[in-house]
Image (tube, rainbow, N blue to C red; front, side, top):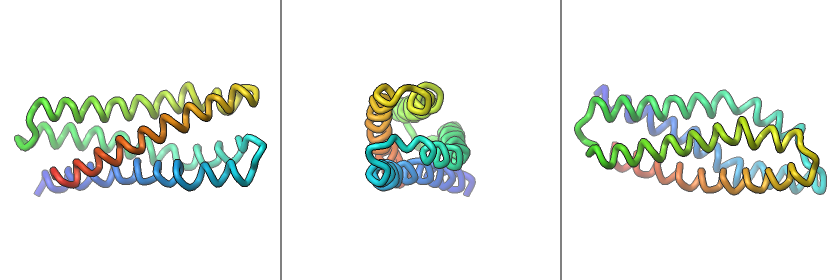
Length: 144
């Protein structure tokens, strides 16, 4: 019962994190840039970012914590696969931290040309993160 609850928390954390990212990458950000072209819509991006950041970071912490707890309490996950999954989660978290503390300030404060280049790199990293994160969610659904 406890492992099922921990697995549920893990799956829901990944769903919040990466399904939300799907919404941004595929719907919200392209729409915002299209509507506000050619301007860089920094005010709207800030509003969205500050509203959603606490939820994203909560999901990241819960995903990592629930995985570590599940792995520690269960003998269902072989050590090698557990380590691979842990590394993937840590890389996804590192990508978000880099986005928040390095890329985002550049996008918000740099001159337009530099900010647009930073946005493009940020968007590509978030797209890759979305694909990897949704894959992790799929693995979780099938394993847990």
